[in-house]
Amino acid sequence: MKKTAEIVVIGGGVIGTSIAYFLSKRWKKVVLVERDDLASGSSGACDIDIILQSKNPGIHLKLAMASAEIYKNLPEELDFDIEYENTGGMILIEDEEQLNVMKEFVKKQRAVGLQVDLLDFKEATKLQKGLAPHLVGATYSPQDGHVNPLRLCIGFARAAAKRGAEICLGTAVTNIKTENGRVKSVVTNRGEIETEIVVNAAGVFTPMICEMVGMTAPIKPHRGQIIVTEPVPKFVMGAVLCAKYIVAKYNPKLLEGSDDLETRLGVGLSLSQTRNGNILIGGCREFVGYNRSTTHEAFVTILKHATRLVPALKEIHAIRSFAGLRPYTPDGLPLLGPVEGIEGFIMAAGHEGDGIALSPVTGRIISDIILDGKTFIDIAPLSPGRFGK
Image (cartoon, rainbow, N blue to C red; front, side, top):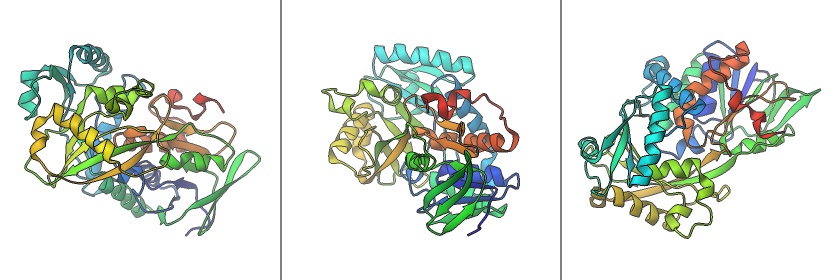
C-alpha cells in the first residue's frame, strides 16, 4: 500500500468507486480504502433500478437526470459490461387519493424536464401484464433503467486502477489525523497514508469516519428487505414501483406509530427483473440500527402488498431473500462537498436508496469540486453543513 496519496477515498461501494474513477480519469494519485470487499455494504444488498421518476422535483431530480446521461455511455467508457439497460419504468396508482398526489408530482417533474406521463389502467396493462384490476392507473417514464450494482462497482474500480488508482481492500480506517484544522493523514490497519484530501464515502458507516475528525453526520441506517424469485421468462417491464413507495421514501414520520403493519414497516412495491430472469421484490424501510437480518414479518407483508398489486406474482416461487442498509438523511438528500472547518475533508454520503442512480454524477461532482473548486450544478442544497455543525 502506498504511503502517500493526493487523495484518499474511504468506501468501496458505488459512490466511492465512482469518485475514485472520476479522479483517476484526470490522472490524480488516488488510494481507495475499503475495510471489506467491493460492494460489501449497501451496494451489494439492493435492487438494480435506476429510477428517475421517484425523485423529488428540484435538485434531486436534476442530479438523477444528469446521472442518467452519464450512464448512456458508461459501459463503453469503463470498457466493462455493467448490465446497463434503458428499460423505462412505472409507478402504480391504487386509488383517487394517490392519483391526485401523483398528478401534482408528474406536473412538477415535467417542468424540470423529465419525460413522464400519467396512464389509465388500460394503458398501464399494455406495458405490464398481471396487474390488479382495482388499480386506477400508473405513471410511466422511458428514462428509467437497470444496472448491475456489483458489476458497476467492479467496473469503476477496474477503470480507476487502469489509470493508476490503488484499490486497497481489507483495509480498515482507524483514524484520520488533522493539524491546524486540515487533514494530514489516514491511519489504517495496514499502515498510514499521508494525504491532504480525504473523501468520506463510507455509506451507513459515514458517521464513524466523521467522528475521527470531530464532527457528526445525520446519517442513519434504513433497512430494506428484498425477496428473490426463481428465474422466469420476461415478466417485469422494467422498474415498477407503487405510489405508496414514494410516501414511504419521503415521509417516514407518517409511518411511525401506525397500527397498520404494512405502513409501519414502510412497505412499498419495488419490482425489477435481472438478466438471468430472477425477479426482485421489495421493499420496506425500517430504522433498526445496523441490524442486517431478514425477518419473516417483513417478507410476508411485502409479498402480500406485491401480490395485491400484481396478482400474477402468486404463480412464481420465491427462492431466497436478503436485507441491506440505506444511508438515510432527514431531508432525503446526500451530503456532498467540503466540510467547513476541516480543510481537505470531503463528504460524499447519505444517498439513501439512490446511490446506484446517483453514483456517476456524484463521482463527477466530487471530482470537479476537488480539482476545479466548482461543478456544473449548484450543490449548496447538499452542503454537509446544512444540518448544523
